Length: 541
Image (cartoon, rainbow, N blue to C red; front, top):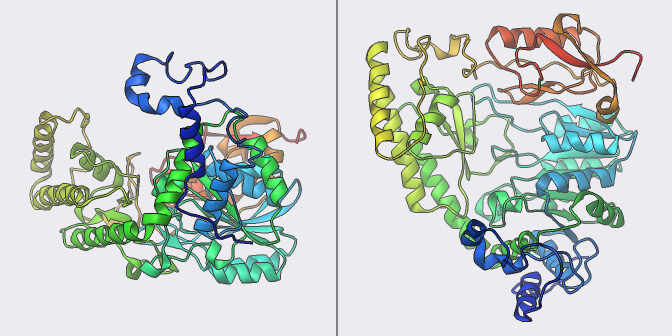
């Protein structure tokens, strides 16, 4: 039952400040003793914060069995984000997701998950012993990004697997694309399944401002959020929210004791209390300003020659979109993601990720008019350079790029600009005069225009069974029918083509062969050339 409590308080922060004012003489951890014994550089970096870096003690509420100030801080967070219960995580959203999944399923249980789920979801299956049932991954043919599961696909999977105990959703995903959580929740609850949501990229959602609806508001049972990713807490801090009668509160509390450190960082916990307070008191205003910045940036980027910045209208199949996620696509300039990222770094712009022909920027409450203008100036500069060089010869292009970036580096950026453009790329009439048709062979190159069908997963062992099985390395050409000991992913689409515990089928081998032929490098494989593959030993599983 949701409570009405004073959201203007910071109970855990206040308890730390009160303790500091008591001037206690410490004979407990940590060894630096409120900063006295800290290294000089650490004192220079964090001096004012060190007195708050305290060991687990009875004088301050217990992280694993909270009864007073920390309990109140978590209750305030639950109310602020729309839940009945909240657990602070000092192991990021990965830890929160592990708590969430392990509270819902156990050894031998089945759980429905998206194929493109975060590695923490797959790791949770190793820890829990649950067996995955995969929903099909969908990704956009032009942008090469996952667009989320449809309600129809989720419902069909639930109907095909009534034995499943829970379904995991990603909402919104890394690119801000949301799914129809409400409809899936209604269907899942009718089938007596829990709905668990990885909302790592959604603690900041405000539907009244045109953003996707938060999963808790749509009725999800457990929701893991990365408070540090898009709000104001410190890196490595997140929250797990829960609501309703279906969740096992006691089990989650026990899992927190198992999965989280017995030496919690009180500064981390205090930052969660502060971030909640900031969100409640200033969140609407901050997000309104943030959205305005993001919309201004998207509009201006789309006016730059050779650059595309898709909105919801450009992403077929997307149910909703968080506009603070900005894709900068430079396919029109003939640049791969790696090349674009390097050009931006030379101009002091650091991006979140790169894939295919685009980079992703996160626009958050920490952005300003100045930071947005700096992005625009950098991208305009890149566009001007490549728009001009596309009209010139390959040789002239390379000389121009090297001369320009040497000048930028001389102005103070120490980043090495190491021959971004290979001879292969500059022997065409332009940098890339036929990007859509080109089959690339450079390890740093990709062809995002391919809308291939991923192999159908053939799960033989649970990830836990496979993890503990005896392994051996064999030539890939001998791997047909064997059980994989590793998870292999290509970017794009960034969705595993083979998972640990899955049978290596002809379809999988054909997919890998095509990817190798096109010059892609696998992620997750011990042998990056994929001449060999790790498999479970026959007869010893």
